[in-house]
Image 1 (spheres, rainbow, N blue to C red):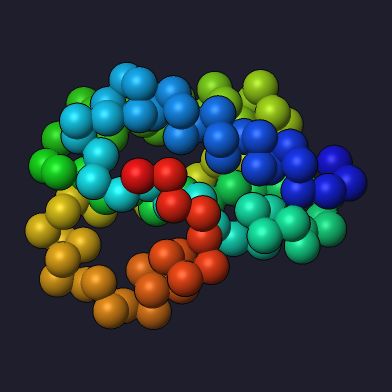
Image 2: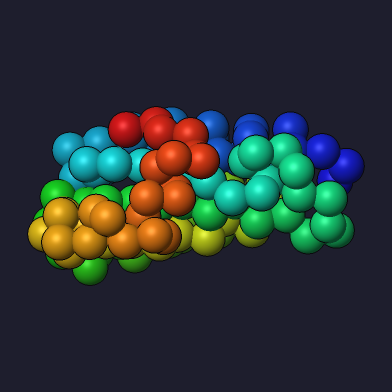
Length: 109
C-alpha cells in the first residue's frame, strides 16, 4: 500500500460497522496513528482504534475484535483495538496515550 487511503477506508468501514452493530455500547471511537494521518510509508499498515465502551462487556469486546480482524483483512491493513470501559477512560482521560489519540485521531463517535 502506497498511501493512507486504504487505512482511512478501513477506519471508516470499521467505524460504520461497529456503530451499526454496537452503537449503544460505544461512547467513543477514535482512529489514530500514522496510517490515519497518511504518513505511514511502511509495507505493513496499522490502523489503531481507541474504543471506549459504556460497560466492561466481554462479548461486545470480542465481537468488535472479530470485526476489526475482518475489516483489516478486507482492506489489507491491521486494525488494532485499544478498548477501555468508560470508568477506566474517565479515570485516565489525561493519560498521554488517550490525549494523543483524541488530539491526532479521527473521532467517529
